[in-house]
Amino acid sequence: MSDIGNWNEAARELDAIVSSFDEGEVSVDDLFAKLERATTIIETLEARLDATKARVDELAPRLSKVAEST
Image (tube, rainbow, N blue to C red):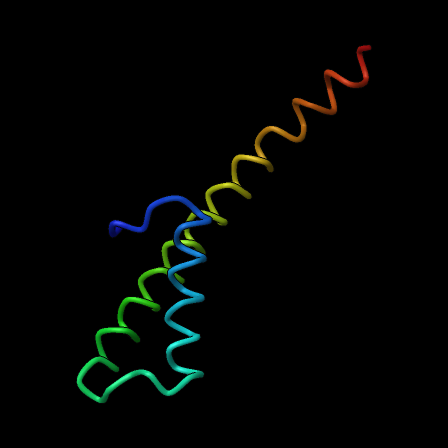
């Protein structure tokens, strides 16, 4: 996806965008760009969560098997 960076960086950037909306700091000219960036961040983080969940779902049976054998 885009140049989102790690989870914490992305979350901080998203928080800053939301704060700028809350504080009325967004001009009409910047509104679309900030909304587009926020959407990109959210979509990227959702994709990362989905990928992580899939990996956990894949590993969980293996971990259970190991735990049962000890």
